[in-house]
Length: 285
Image (cartoon, rainbow, N blue to C red; front, side, top):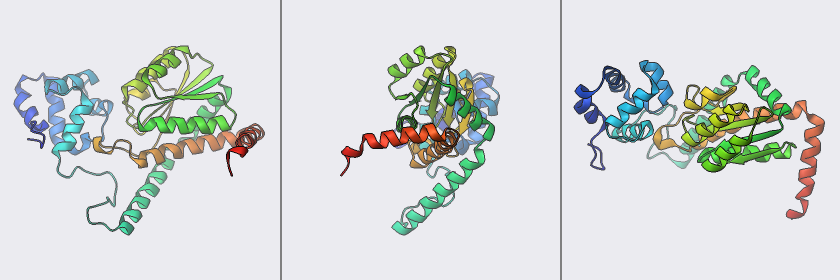
């Protein structure tokens, strides 16, 4: 039983196992054997590993009394005394400030190097071509990814692009309804499973916008609608949502993309950066 008085996922699985369909039992068997792995798996990951549909997994979670897969993952995390950490050198209770600083620095260096290994030059080149040809660029993100979207808007605006960002579900949906084949839409989601972002990206794709998704999960719902998938190398458990490491990885990929665009459009971007810098001179001492 969990600390909040609720039954643990393992107990719920055991007590409901006989009433499950064969497909749901396959999900249960996999989870019982790979509990730690579930923390860092999207619903798409799990469906491919178990070879069942995503709807089966959602139905499985609801049969146990959870609203969906994310709530089930949170319960799994709560049930583990020491959930597996994908990073070496995990910060531990009792570490000195010096040790904490060194471990976090080492983790972030590893994330940057791992993200670099995931960079696919063909995907970057395809993204650059789309951005340079676009009438407008929109960045969508919710929660922590909303700040990445806002940061991206600021960077692209200073480079002279017609760009905006949205972090409200209704605004994203409405903006997605107005794009067409002349526009580029970036969907930013660490998990790749943020429903509001995925729904907006689906609408934008239906309206023939060019879709680029920036995510830490190569097999996730958002990637189903992407023309280009840009991957960052940091995974989060339910208790790590919004981790700085994930943002560092996302910004690293965006930095590579924007710097490559700056080089290709050197004169135009320099002119825009110069104008925007001059525009705020009187805002500083």
